[in-house]
Length: 359
Image (cartoon, rainbow, N blue to C red):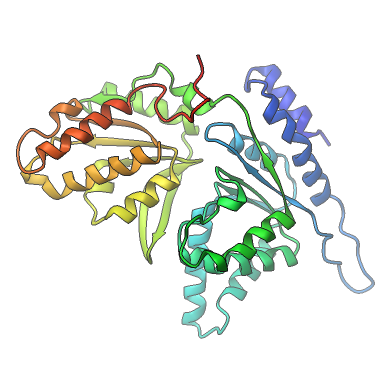
């Protein structure tokens, strides 16, 4: 069986990847897990024994370091049942399954849902574990205990060290045992590469397109395919019991049209959740703003504020330059700050963490 280290070296030699010390350092951890989960399970006298516990991996670090790419390399190499899924999407499925179980009168609604997951996979690979919703925080500990007990191995990426999960969240003290569980059952590994590959891909590229013409759409499509490979699924976020949908999503990169996010009845909490889930947002077809679409304009201002504070990289197409988007009606003065932020967010070094800006 070819090791992940050899697979990585082959792709570097082909020019598909750039050699990176931080990425190479974590490869033995992936090999350790793959060797363990693919080893034959010992059989007892009467039935197949439960698999021996295998310590998973919690891979964390700054954005654009290649965490998701490394996990994809690992997932592609497995021959055992594995599922790769964004953590938000997975938790949405769990909530939906629990709702259906309650409709059937099941007393412990989590049990059949967790059992179904455990029977379907040997390895669960989560992209971007983060806990922002109290309903997730209250069930995730029991869910993972069940999965670990059933022999499921968890590999996950995150932008946060475990101790910062659900930071400042409501009733966080009830969540702390889950952090201890993560540390016990997963190897916590920081990928501390000095290179930000996602930013490097955007370096020198136009990110604000005036007029949504054919050429602009083609340029945005090229950026989208470069960042995601063109593969994406909707991402549904749960915010205070409501669903907020990003139409296209993969590995921290979202894509939507203006009216998807600003034409819907969304509020500050929704936009904070969107900003928390994304590292790059491609937002298309921003119209001119005025009293005729005042509500949409207000939501757009709130969205940009959330993206700005969270350092989310914005790529967009709009009907005019930032300063010319909102020229008449109530709110024009307040929009000056938004226009200024849109300008600042176009800088190729914007959003990089301090100390990580390359010369």
